Length: 192
Length: 192
DNA sequence: TACTAATCATACGCATACGTATCATATTTG
DNA sequence: CAAATATGATACGTATGCGTATGATTAGTA
Image (cartoon, rainbow over the protein chains, first blue to last red):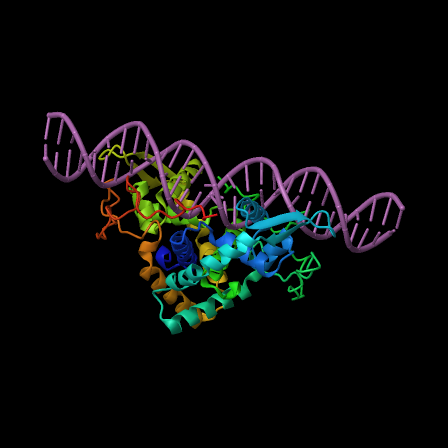
């Protein structure tokens, strides 16, 4: 049986927890309480104004249900606005507020510092190689996660939010089929 | 502003989510619903019978509060037993049950396969290098997380569980001081 | 020995993370 | 066009993950 301490899964989990802790430490030092996920969502909305929630989650490869809660908290913090799309009354169109833009700008140095600090054990060459391997591994298993990375294709709000672009296979490929496939934690119950 | 898609924090999170999905996919294929964390805890208890919960969490660098719930679910699944220590009535001594041992053995191939599959995008040399960098980064930032890796030092159950050993700085160094230090998400509230 | 400090476990609260189900609305098709 | 299907958002349940607080005990100290 392989040592637990050498298993990739275990190591990835530990580094992820360190990364979150480092991120929040850096941000709390400048009075911000954004989580890494909230930051990622806010960044995405800032750079692609007018996205709906499903597109945001596809953009950063997060779970749609989870992003719903993240968006909710960002709205409560007053850093984004959410309104019903005029083109599709199911969708909620998201835009960043001036306050959100200010905060993003203010925490930018801390975010950069966190990215550096979480890999402080690696030198420059190692960091570059590590990032390369991370991306390679992720690309190969993109479809294994619940929320594969996808590129959206509609600016939605028209007017301003037109800097999206990037077509490609969006839609259709997601999970969430009504008649589900790919069950994971279900039908389990280890046989007694 | 750096691209979100190139930030280590973002990439680490995505790979972690892929790793969890792969793990659970592999295990559900053989009828098991252990989570990665439950597996790590069970492995630790199996290899170091007689540990208390705090020692388990220190051993695998997980949070003590979280491990409490994990242990609880393992007890409910009937794979471990938890009883009050005779030496320290505050502590709960943990041991694996025969059923737990059987299950561990049965899922071993799936666990190995998951470790391989989650890095299927990397060749052998890359995988080795990736793991080396993971460990190096983690070692350097061990203290950044809430639950740094520590080695326990008391077998606790006496009799059987004596294969622990590995002394070193345990105790004292943990977080959880009564008068807290290292606040993270607190005293925040971004200035309006 | 009495008091203080440290430690184990646990409780509560909040934030991801995700399987699943449902409602509302679009889109596709026969 | 009407029925079937797909999609956006959300609700519910469970599992981490972790800051914080507290009760029970133990250890350390005046």
